[in-house]
Image (tube, rainbow, N blue to C red):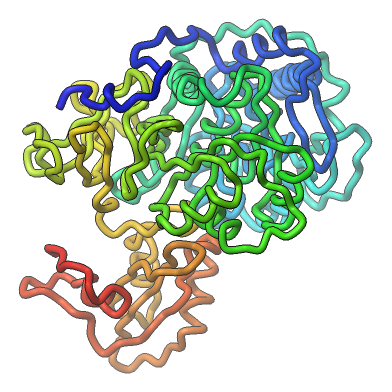
Length: 543
């Protein structure tokens, strides 16, 4: 099975490469030296050249240093897609600090946990977060606020009801000279919070080298699609997520490409941007491709799209076929996880497509399927087992959690907890996701987190959460509860309770009260019986 995927690589793509021994800050410098006047960012029809971006990143680094940030300290970014995200991200790294990207929809307990666990000193966030931050305690945390609703520029004024500083007021008067901070490629660049293999949030520690290598692996994969300085990436998947951070932002910066940034997914605006700017690279999730494929595009010309990667959830073949027919571009599935920076495998852009497969391992990446019971015995082609991964993009471990790290990193191999197989051509197939994890529009939702919260409600006796199929989002969480004998609690009340403690996307779309939950002979809740009404023909799983 060893490296059988090499025969499936397309012409001109080799397996072994020499990777740049640079930090991400140096990568931006190098692209600026090569393409100083090339457009780096486009947002709300406003443009920034590489020279302008590099200058703003240095100003950001100098600002953070003036606020007391030292190498190795953590700085949070809780921003929707915007120029400010790119400037903040690379500015943090240029200052020698560690970036902590946070989902802009996080609030309450989740936000407090990441603040505490990472030990961040500064949070860079957006104006809409002011009410959330004002209502919570964040001792010692310095807050920088920006407004993403207008193109980022000096003199943009707005009111603040929080002890914070405005990025627009303090950034532009900072020096744009490169700060003399010693940063090594093996220094930690990013704490990417993920549920990992247990559903408990952990910070995957990714070095500059991990992230630069993964961007370079992707660049090699797209070698036959575009030349450096000629890539045009449409960026609509969220940058706080490692998928967009590597496949779109870092990949584009490494290749001196242009990044067309949308703050959120709006179908009409996305098609308008494609029609106007003619981007050729588009990374997305199934719901986005499905929305385009099933929509009458009318006056919009989408034919500039040449290559796309679909990640986070399975891509229905009908969507795949309709999207390719509509755009003329090549849509390819991929597989990754935060612990791998994140990309592990992608279907060759000009190679064979196998529906249901996530493609072949990237250059210098090894994948094997092992017996999930032993974690060691390598299984034959087509046999389902645990997917384990080895490569230069694999994380260093979980931040401050050596026990959790030791559970998944063994002799340089990452044990993903995902089940799958490899065929004789080296194509990887994902059979099942980590136990009962729910994927909603690319976001991972762990049922136990919602169940544990429901158990804290005074009237709830038992709770079980499953993923229910949804036509656009893939899956949505649904909860089933058993109330205590004398309790009388409505679905509305339970949803309100969840809303007070969970991010909006994790709140169950439906909560059904039952007399009892289905259980096995040993008392284990049988979620498969709750799912049967949605998937009556699904084979029984062994619970």
